[in-house]
Length: 130
Image (cartoon, rainbow, N blue to C red):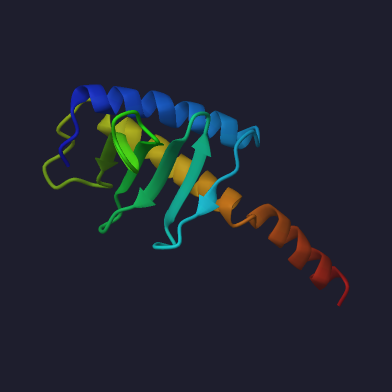
């Protein structure tokens, strides 16, 4: 992965905030049509965050903005991708911490997008009624 030190620091800060707001249920994630392991949320002025799985067990996050002045469509503002166990170790300080934080956010966003808590409660009720 080719993360700069700055992108790792920025991504880690954003991932921590997104995780906090997801836990507090202040943001709700959506599934992506293209991939079952990709989840996104749009906040504020069209800022879209997407958390996604990479081949080989890595995880990535992107921040895009819709309607960016002077540009059409979605514009990548930040992208960071981290492998689970890089062959030669992590190349940038903070990548291992970013991977751990992204893994947590990916699971929380998956549960939010798929409404897992509600569905588990529903199945429990069904099983109780048997």
